[in-house]
Length: 400
Image (cartoon, rainbow, N blue to C red):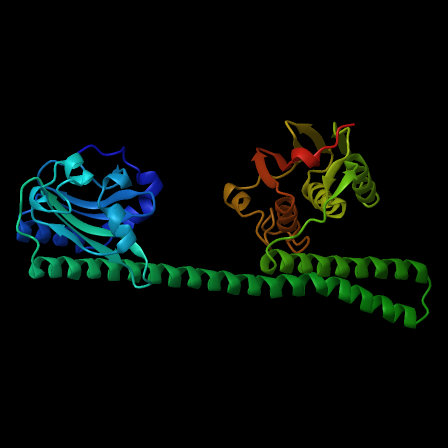
């Protein structure tokens, strides 16, 4: 029997699920011993696949876990449709199967195949046995045994699925609980300072202290800080519960204008040198507010965590209809373990940083995703780079 090359990479999950059933080896052995058949197997059967998940081969057919057969060459193609047992003692004497292509292709004389139907009614595959010699297998006892074994396998597969679903739900619940705890802790910490500042400012104004303009200005900063926190939390809710942050794209957006506005805003409160190198010479199709927010988060993050005296660099260009914006700064190396989770909510590049909610990078990655793009991070020694890449497509780049 000639099989397709092993497909373990493609079908590893199904093979592994069957292999995890400890009784499968014994079931295949009993099927061969009781019937005298030389080969028995558990096969995964889909609309286009016949896959060996487990096999006992005493006659050298050559099938092993992960091997495939062309579905149309097997009788399982028919079983997939009617979900009934197929059995014959001798294909040469059977009116229905004496001219059937499967016995002719594989040289089979005797055959039995029973569908494995999971508890949700779906067909997983079949429990089958074959031999090149005639065997007396079309009996109630043999068919009943195969049906019982098929039901046992189906029950075990369904139990695995239920267990996996329970495990996924438990992991999700633990993640929700962790996020809830971090949310309460971080929000409480970040709101405490601006609220305290506003409260102190009000007390000073009530006493008619000098420098009231300075007090009002600091209060406005604190209120802006609280507004920023609330906006980030709203974006978090949209990203986690609403299927991502939607992008209200519009044509004709001048990227250089967006970059200049953001850089000018950040320079107003930072002395950090920001170098801009943009080669985007035509309008693009995007959500200017969200792309501006992404740029502000990336540049602000680089300024906040960058080493003093080293400039922050922004490179923007279009190559092969992909817009790429990279923000680079020098800073303390980010460990790989931290880098992997950097775009998750409430994560910060520096473990002891108290700057912000830890939502900026998460929100930026959601904005990138909303534009069909990606946001990635890399750390090469002390050089930290964040790269936003967005495919422009036919409508994304309007030639000048």
